Length: 88
Image (cartoon, rainbow, N blue to C red; front, side, top):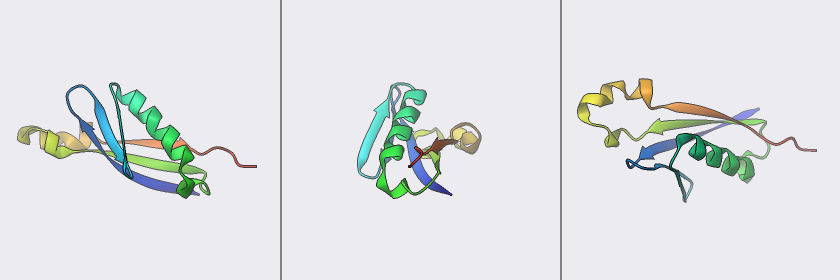
């Protein structure tokens, strides 16, 4: 059975950012941030009983210029599927 986690994705011009609970994580490359997210999610006790966790990354639209906001759902939102470790 899967679970879901919703995160807000930010970018400051050099690094991608998000928060998982009270933990702030960032990376220069989006793939690196996604890898960090997957590592953290796999260690979170609240997801231990699940086979997978679907992580939704929604862009912080406040960072976008007004004229670009109409396109944000097409270009800036993404999802990760985190497969949880097999338990004995």
